[in-house]
Length: 86
Image (tube, rainbow, N blue to C red; front, side, top):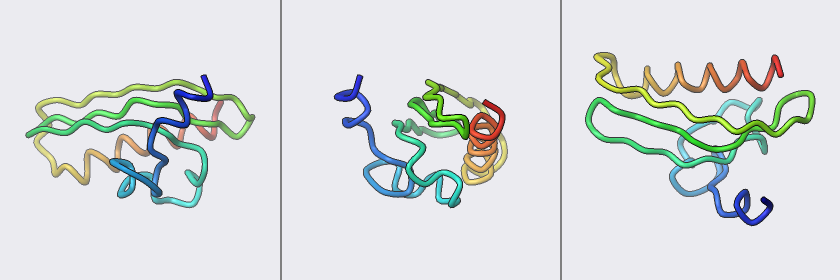
């Protein structure tokens, strides 16, 4: 498992995740991959919650009509809720 986690970019730090999960709450907590094409966006990875749990997550949005940034913000809010509530 450690090799898998080490292979994933960290939110706000590296790779495809460098411009995502910039809020201080996410520091050191999110490693994931992104996927983006016209009107489709995805995240899949792991998040460490406030209770110390490591939770796998994946989400996919398709056919959205708002800006990509707005959709990303909403997706990040879901991950934030996972951190805070689990």
